[in-house]
Length: 480
Image 1 (tube, rainbow, N blue to C red):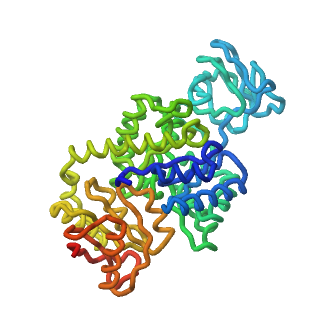
Image 2 (image 1 turned 30 degrees about the vertical axis):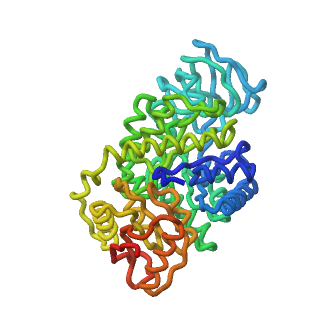
């Protein structure tokens, strides 16, 4: 398989739960499998996690599992007929106290706080912005609106407020239970929906660490940026997280479609500057839910995310419920590789800001030294013997045409590194003796066909061997 720097996240669902198909998708290029906790019961997720681990084992490749929490249900209730058709100019009432099913005049709310979060003049966007309601006034528990943009509204569709401002907490009681479920199978990442600030992420981390303590596990935390309120707090959210997801669906509804492309670029750049990972998500290959080939616009969208430097591109309904899950993964991998080839021609040099970097840690300096030296020597590979995965993460924050191979003896570290751009994580137990370990690493690389006689590669490691955060050595080797 060619070395593809950009990783692919695929959502597991009814369309991709066949073991043979899932194995084929992993072989086709899936690096991370997303379990969407908005659907299914706890046991369903436990069973799916087992399915993923078994499929990865049969494919001979490790993948990370990301548990994506549902977050607050900011939705309308159910309708007597399952759906209604709202006409422009009609009155429509969103009533938090309503218990009977909805009709064309109004509907109940899953989100009971809405009457306290809105006032006259606010615009409410339903069903991903396809329906727009203008708030006329609020009377008790009832929000009286006029339909500005009509259409079909069905059960449990989402509600956003233009410009943000809904007070729903990021973590619900269901999310707290789901965190326990996710930790029971040691999910490698937990994606937190609708965080507004660093406090939301710190609370999620505390809950994850408590739930995972008995398994001696610590998941990576991904903040899904999908609320307008999160944008001013982006830097503090990044510091409190291990990465972010550019969740373009809800974000576009709140801030407007036209604002999202520039925000996406800004978020990717900021994540890389803060040594965090970043996933670009929502509608990347949407047409492939029903069609065997993507649109030209979708090809450009995926390619631009790659050129911006995203760690991963994500598939949602395309692989969870679409007709062509395997074909979608193959197409996405092809687009990523083509964009990276173009990028390697355009950016033959290391990052322009590389020389302006300043480091306070020895292991970070060694990581940067490896990149710089390998680039100027034209090395075949950059290799990191790593315990925690920190050194490969730092290396992956800079653009280089040289593939990074991270060798670790820890399965959890290998899986976590599956999300890092341009890092191929390898599981291998190496000796505590430095010379033996370096020899073992080179043998492993030769067996995999990564290096051959005469190739030059850079390798980083720590002395004494095996101490976390202890990378302090850089060696340039030529394969004998």
